[in-house]
Length: 171
Image 1 (cartoon, rainbow, N blue to C red):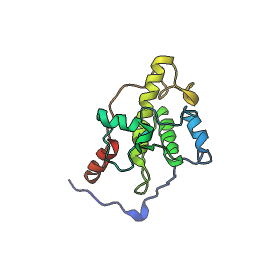
Image 2: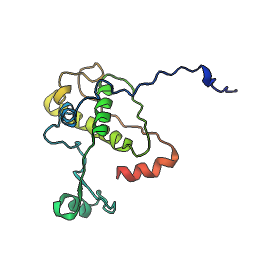
Image 3: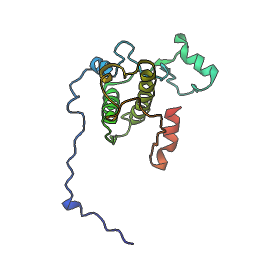
């Protein structure tokens, strides 16, 4: 079996950033679309982080440190580009469309992906309690079907060189 190389002179790729219709939304409007206008926090995320990256939030002692406002922890604040990414992924997921999240280094793709997974888990929990999804998603169906978001695992693929940074950021 042989594989030929693409003739890049004849490949026509129509590329769009994918957020044109959302690009004029303010941070408050994004939080509103994501159903947490008052709280302004990613569901299931810790509220604070350690600016020195020494604290391990999965231990009881360090979890208490993060909950103490006087400990020196820094409030975890989602930025506009992170919120727009999460909202776009949520909208596409509800429509059954795939998402390819890519950008420059240090643009918070890890935060967006983990935030997206957290939102799906929160929406799933919300639906169990209220028989509908929260906020602007209340009248939507998950991928055109009645019922809740299925409880399925996630597969995150990344180059081997990013395994350690991903694991570190997730923790």
